[in-house]
Image 1 (cartoon, rainbow, N blue to C red):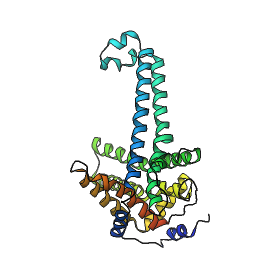
Image 2 (cartoon, one colour):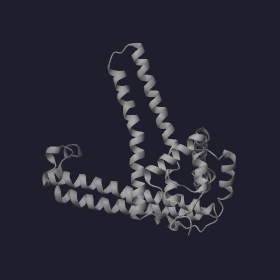
Image 3 (spheres, rainbow, N blue to C red):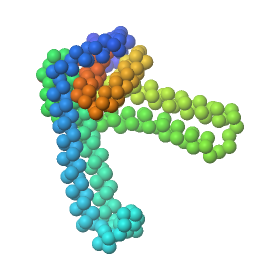
Image 4 (spheres, helix red, strand yellow):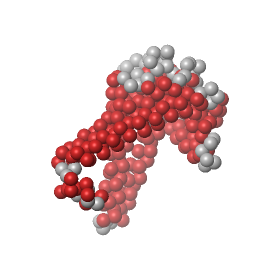
Length: 287
């Protein structure tokens, strides 16, 4: 068995505990002093997304002008979607365009989301924080780990839901006996519950990569194992946090100035209380 640091080993045997109120309280106490960094990081993240979207939009417009048949440009939008009206080169361009957008999500946007989490993780243990930490994970090693984590997580969550859709369609379009229908509904409910269990079990996988530089699959597995000991507590922690965020968004969103940084702090404090922050990587937490 692979050797881990003491705090992670304790977490793996369920030797940890926390209360939702204490996590919320500590996270709130840490809001002062980190708001500017987190909102700055979010602003930088949004600015980069907008800039890339503008560039991609310009490229798409130029490609449409150059690759579409001249008479197709004059047609209605409905007619343009017809395959017979679209040149083969434009179809190839669209496929490449979608592939580029996918890699931008994995290589640019996803690591920046990890960078926002990093700001709070550093702050709650008294380390330097900066909006520019959102760019700290634009490295091949981190991108690869985030990519593997994302692919495995999507497969794990989407495959059961695909079966739910198939079972639902079978129940809707076929005449089944009552026992068989009851069996299929039971299976469908179990698949949904299993997906919910995994979704909340995986919530700390990204932090494990950030903090301990674990591999994607390893981070998912450890997060699930550790969260399972207090799954309902973690579940309600995130549910209550989400409810408070929604409520704070109602009055023109002004309270989000405080509650959104607080939510990032909640995630960081919960991770610290459950796994402990090792800070092994100088790029992330030990700097």
